Length: 195
Image 1: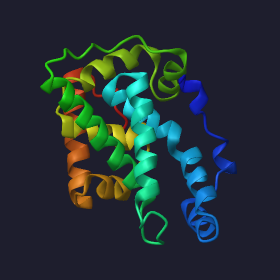
Image 2 (image 1 turned 180 degrees about the vertical axis):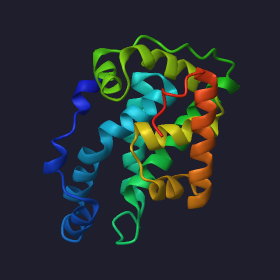
Image 3 (image 1 turned 30 degrees about the vertical axis):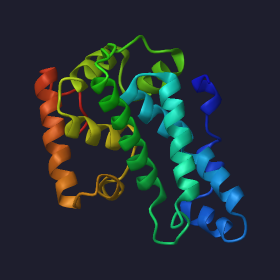
Image 4 (image 1 turned 90 degrees about the vertical axis):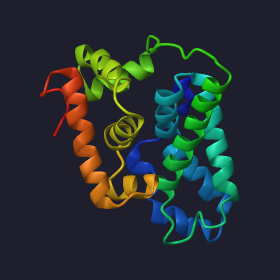
């Protein structure tokens, strides 16, 4: 499946999580379709960054939504859908990476990005910085890479990151600060990462 088939509707047309939960009370199938439409592109990009393979990223998001269908609390009022989806996606991706290493497969280097990915990155970073940041991200710890991806690439709030990683809010803030400092150290350019 090509990434362009994962485009979202305009964010202004998408219902909010509370609205989706209200719809789920009468039509869970429709509500799950709205969840998939709302989050699939961001989950796909998140998974793609970690596994660096289009098909595996697509398989991950399919499995995430299958797990969501079977999660009996998913539409509960106090259930944090977005954080849960990203946590499950991250865990599935890291399982893939672990399995590759176990099998002794050599992880491929960052490949050339297709135009969809390039467009997304160009909105956040200049073309020149993109390659440097991606290379630097591969040189920092998994915890630092993960928290930076959740905050700046997947656009999760501090509270959502806290829920996703199952860590305290204060830990999110301090880990994010350390991750940005480490990335700037690797880049040797304090102006690359937004404060």
